[in-house]
Image 1 (cartoon, one colour):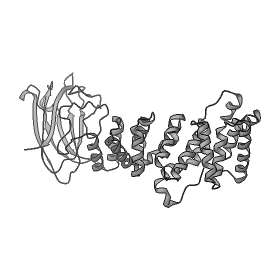
Image 2 (tube, rainbow, N blue to C red; image 1 turned 60 degrees about the vertical axis):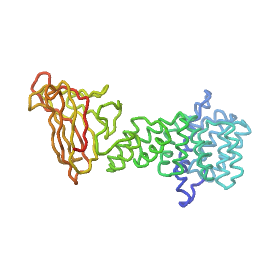
Image 3 (tube, rainbow, N blue to C red; image 1 turned 30 degrees about the horizontal axis):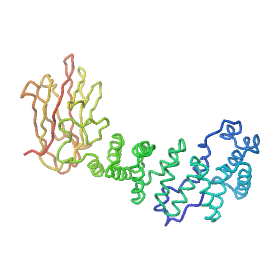
Image 4 (cartoon, helix red, strand yellow; image 1 turned 135 degrees about the horizontal axis):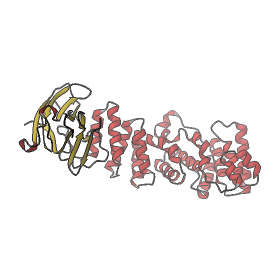
Length: 405
């Protein structure tokens, strides 16, 4: 592979160039076998494979490729070139031989020969991973970002397992505006690897901010994102302490939200994987909470208390009122569930106890005061231990936390 450019040239290309030499060293493992003994051996011991079939051009080419790794000596590269020429005499379609000669030409600065060989290799096979890596780097060297992404797309569609090698590099696109624009255009065409890549970015992004920038751009382009990816990105930003950034990203996936109010008062969002800013059922200590068809159903076994439902808030200082409606809550006064508003990782700001559902037609309301030194809060429904055999159970069909009038 060609050498990586100077530091001044890397800003738009190191996301795709760095590590390609190392990747090329194992790329041969992704090329399909023909079933012959030599090809079977080639997957583990190309030297033995070449000894068994010295006249098989593809085996000779595979042997040549093993001598061109990142740590190859000059003598190994000379031998690799000789073997590659022999392989092409044995089989003019041996793509590994073409790519070996092309990489050698590029290393010695012969760009014309290298690109001619690259073109030939692409004609022979679009399934050769090393050829596609070579094409990627050549495109990046010419500052052709769409061209590089085109070959990324080919590699990810045609080389089984290539995502394990290529996704981490491609994920760096989130930090560069020009690359991100081209990547969004590629993903908008819905290649077969797009969902796997998006989930990989959400689950393993080293920088949650990069994931949020990429996903925000995808959302604006109308590219559907898995709910799990959205929730994971919000969660990663919160864990990184960037709560405001998490909210900014959240506003791109839940249009029209207002930080002065809790979200989804009628429980109609039907989210399989909610984020921290959505209603999140909590099932702990044997309790069960679920949201279905506009209703929150909850239950706790006898003598057990615990959190049932929660939603993160970013309320500005002031007085806020929680209002809602319940069904089926029948407990003693000291075992009735309650709403609590707490500063994030801090003190409790108050409680609003839910009355029995037979009282006030099931309606409840109460106020909280949010101080200036509490910028992040959690609104939670908490169940208290009940001595009844049936434990605690009930339903909610409406809850809203909003500024008090």
